[in-house]
Length: 268
Length: 276
Image (cartoon, rainbow over all chains, first blue to last red):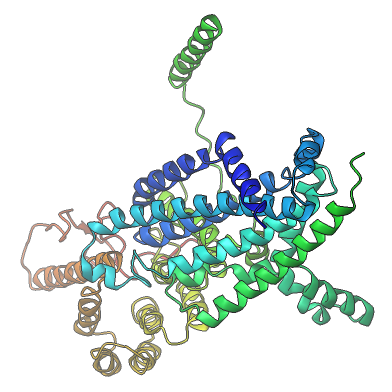
């Protein structure tokens, strides 16, 4: 297990070297710029719109990082042949996969943490000049701690997306991995529709396939609590815990799958 | 590397200068109708993936811009608010809890032409959609009552809506008397003034502004009536200014005065109908 740490640290360092965190500057500019412009464009609701925008940007930026770095995690090492000296070291292939995953997850965590701080900061300054009675009419306070629930769910979603990207990265080219991962992400957003397939289709076989896909494919729509949080609708802790367990199980399944595939790959 | 960098800076400066020069010959003004690429709210909801909140905001901002652009357009432009309801429908399908889109949207929709589309029926549809999403939101029921009262003059329906709003959780205690006043004095200016005075106490600035405008319109109607009474008694009074400071104009049909189309208060309820 001790070999996982150095691999993860190397992935994190590489992310820093690749200027991945430059997206934070873009995020900051987007939020601050929007907070200035939104007030001119909308009749009130600035805080709601900044929350929507901040959470959407957090999710979207994280998604791009998870996909476009995730797909290169293994395939780039194989292409560059840097995987050979790595595997010659006292490190097993499963440790290599786990380390790569942990490194990207750490990158995403740091990214998300900074974005969350930036979002709260912008919300603080936005709400500062607004009288308390007007704030009372909002669905949720500007500095609502429940926003952290939405961020936590985004992190869970990104953890699954990263695992999907890494899984494809172990046996496919970066281009194909990106297409597959994006495909799984989009299908995962519509997963709930598969459950209701029997309402529009009569064929029992088609219904059975749709049901199977519903349970096998990741249900990304489960991780979306952004609207609820923005409107101050409670998100139960049990739901959060169940979603975390679901994400953990899915990630574990994908990582074990990736380890099996990677262990069987012949690099000769 | 200095040469290419200087060349790049020079070319950029030239492009900026040319852009400024081109602006001297503005493009011919073409009065094109607005366009909405996605009309199906369900299709938009699916296409937005997990970014429904922010997509709803975009449609809401578009609705505001559409309303504002048409409302403030010059006299040569035929005001067309046909995209307003589809945009609000999209925004509220993407975010079913988008309170301001229902409440402000219903005000926009009910506004008489040319200040708005003059479609209280669509305002009611939008508010009923909001009530379907949040059945205990007394504010939507209250707004429904206002649409019935102010635009449709259906005082029985208005009183029923106020009564139902008063029975909802967290409804203010003035809602129940409002229902009774509406039923007893429906159509009376005093009852109307009582309704808007309560709304003017709202915590939401845009709602307060709307209520203040209505109250000022009621004041204008009082001045118009007083002027007509004085004239009928044979007094020769000058044409006064309305409460916004714009002079009233003579109404040849009644011999009285009405608010000018240039006034901020134009049109008063029932003064104009949208083009069919």
